[in-house]
Image (spheres, rainbow, N blue to C red):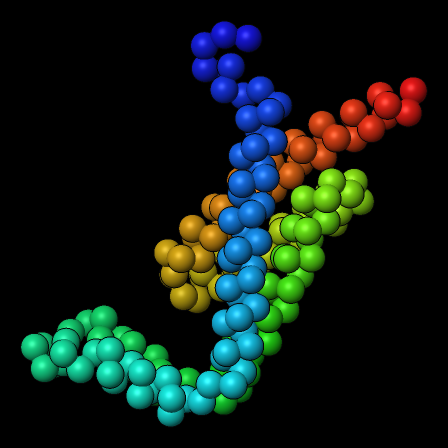
Length: 167
């Protein structure tokens, strides 16, 4: 192999796969922590934090778009929305972390399960994007697409190696 194809050898692809899994694992841990925190944090506490963070912006410009957006968002949060966010983040984080641990341990049956679950996450994220137009959701979705491609590649590689070793 020469030229740009040299960059695509199995060792490098595997390294990219592992690094992306570790990053996704850290993100899953942060989702778990955020889910637990969201369950115990009250709307009043969030409102106090947003008011404290935005007080200088409001003093400088009472019509600041971001500060007003944050304030309006927290004021319109309901208890059921906070509970949903907490449960969603917790479940999403736990499921992803469980799958990532299985993938890092190179257990073959985790690969197809992960492909299906990550694809379902993408479908849900795109559904949510239709309502929120959140750039963050598009970025997370793009990362998930890359992870699916790398997971598929890794699965095919490991499965082929596994069958060669059995022969």
